[in-house]
Image 1 (cartoon, helix red, strand yellow):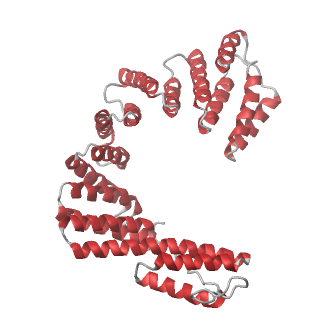
Image 2 (cartoon, rainbow, N blue to C red):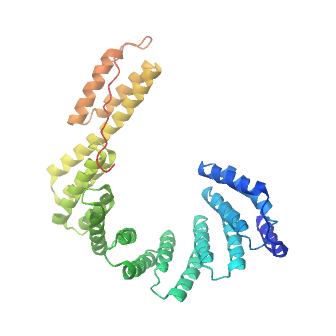
Length: 391
């Protein structure tokens, strides 16, 4: 039905002359836009649909019709209503072609948008066909190394990744990278995104030699852009460490793993789950080398970090229960936190355990429940962590 209404609108509009919009048209657009900015996408959609009804009286090449269609397409896309979004953007393209011709640059920009909607709907072959049409136009008008084609080829790579076509995606990223290098040189920060995506594909292909080279190049570009101690380096260091480990380049991999761990500790704190995850990777690295003591130390600390983090969550729950006056629930959460800490030891764990036990001795005598094994509990003073640099 929506397709029929849009087609009829396009045809009947040919006999109408452009005119000034009634006052309510501008009001509807403004209110719909305001709702959209607040995240009320269903409300914004309703407003744009009302504006679209009024827009039927405008001329066929009136940009206001195009604006409403584009807005509706965006609202439907955000809400995951890909069929409706694709209908709107398709008819918006038809209006644009009618008003400005098929070679209007905005037509091809809208085609790229339509390809995104089709991809969201899982119509990968249709999306790929649209992007290939756009790419052929870009190459026809700007040559094989048209800088605008790089973005289109990257989008094609994403679709090939969705289709699990790793070789095609790798070739796409390499082509886009070459086009960008011709335009901006080999040391421009704008290359980082494509290099990062290419290295991920190379890891998936298990081409660790190529992945190492790509990660090293990406790391250099990132360090030049943000310095040697920025959180933006984390993903690249992680990938570089893994690519070296997979090649059994242990001597080169170890300092990268240690740098990765130090950077996570600096940016997230010593007791963050991602620190624990990195410690697990370091432990696996040491086990692979037969360094059992180092592996045990890394694994032990990883367990301690995870236990501390989980216990802290339970502690916060206990604090909330205390503020609500539910002492029994608070005690239950604190006792669960102690059990979580039982298997592990570290300075942080010991400090947390001592404070919880002290609090339990204050608040443990709960009417109707009896005294806990650890005794009564009192409110635990929580330390505020100062933000680290770069957060």
